[in-house]
Amino acid sequence: MALQWDQVPPLHTMFFALADLEKRSEEASWAGSSSLEAKHKLFAVYEGHGTLTLDGRAYRMMPGSYFVASPGSWSEIRGGGKLDLCWYEVVFDVYRAHDGKVVQDDTLLRSANARLTEYKPQLLGMLQELYADKEAVREIDRFRNHIRFQELFYTLFQQELLEQPVKTDTRAAVERSIELLHRAYQEELTVERLAKEANIGRWQYTNLFKQLTGKSPIDYLTDIRIQRAKELLLTSDCKLREIAVLVGYRDEYYFNRRFRQTVGVSPKRYIQSMRQSLKVATLQYAGEMLALGMKPVAATDAMIGNYADALSGVTTIGDYNFNPNRLAEVKPDLVLAPDYWSHQELEKMTKLAPVAVVPWEDDVFERLRAIARLLGKQREAKSWLARYAAKAKQAKQRTAGAIRKGETALILAVSGTEISFLGARNVGQTIYHVIGFHPPKPIEHLIRQDSCFSGGELAIEELSRLETDRIFVVVNDNEHASTTLAQLLASEQWRSHKAVGKGMVYMLDKRWMWYDPHTLEWQIGEAVRMLAR
Image (cartoon, rainbow, N blue to C red; front, top):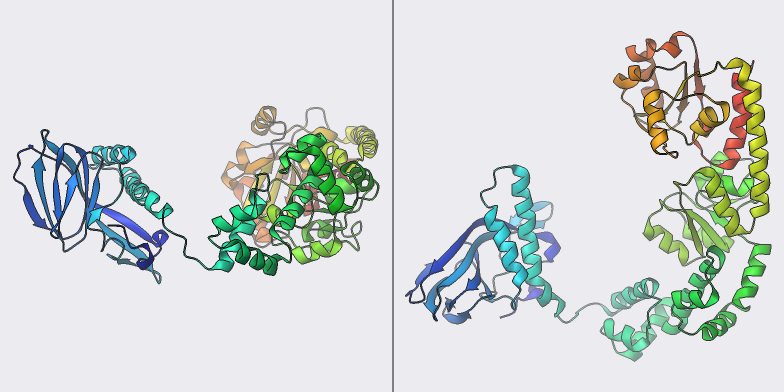
């Protein structure tokens, strides 16, 4: 008897609580016993044969068979065959989360006085693990057993649920197939397959698809593939035939024709034209673009706030809750994004423009080179790097008289309720690498292990372990930062620090935290004004 899945609450609202687990074994000639079940009971046979009768209906017991009895049902087991009958007997309760409460719920298995599933050897292994650890004392081990018990029922129900006919709203089914197109555009997708997976007739599927998207399924799929091809053409070194395969076309020449039909020019011509007049939106790398002599057509609120003068007139698209309508209005040819943005957000953007993801953890100079290659600005990147190196050399010379050889400096950042020590990135690029201060020994050790080490959280009590000649403090303007700074300045550890006693403390604004070429070039000039005599 199959479970009545359309008559029970969603499985994700339910959980199963193990009450008892026993290993039973009876001789083949055993006459049997009967009982009235007070709780749910699972019978899992691993050896021998017998008969299980549930509320008057008999079922054959054999290795690998599983049965469940609901509360209030009568069960009777008898031996049979040549081998002893051996089985696990699992007593459990079923609960459901409902309106903020947890309630006992028997609806899921009420109609299931029957064999649950075909032979699944992995279930016996799961039961063996549960049985072996059923006397666990530590709470964490008991919790692990609870998780195992949920996994047991997932395995029990999995196949039967997968075989259930899909009964769903046709519109929702088509919407799900649209998402499938975005995920699986590389595969050989046909209207017949999409309609079948949506459990809708081909004609109905095509019409509803056009109502939702304004396009036929094949035209919509072509747009996705061509959009991805644009992205690869601009951001990779793949050959044309490789790109064709990556976006779902097995024939390079057919891909070339489809691209020309959709875009109006060939893939090679598209690359050439884009390099000449590329409209770029950026989620993080405005500083890199400015260093390359480019201005984005759109940027996040944070980017525009930080470079207010340089980015005047640039369209704002929000921050992590970016506004797709604003991005669509500027019709960018490319979106530059860091890899810390969520896959879901980046996927939304790929529907509007090709997206190039640049690793945020790379050092600032490698990032600049990578972005320059994407934008065809290698010459500008080389020029900026040379200019930066010259300015850094001049800054070190101009501040040399004010800094003793081997002088140390600690860089702190105050943001919200947290205090952090900083490493070789951000401010550290200027203070340590350009000016030449040495970090305190514990931080120097971390930087040697990882040249891109950015920093870590610091408790005020640990400040005494980081004695240095000078302290630089970057203070963010977010909520609670001023209160946290006041607590730091009032602490005994701060007042007794060598640098504080000598008056060698420098308060810096949040701009010093930005880690990009445009900001680092600005920092060099500021550091000279702050430190040179």
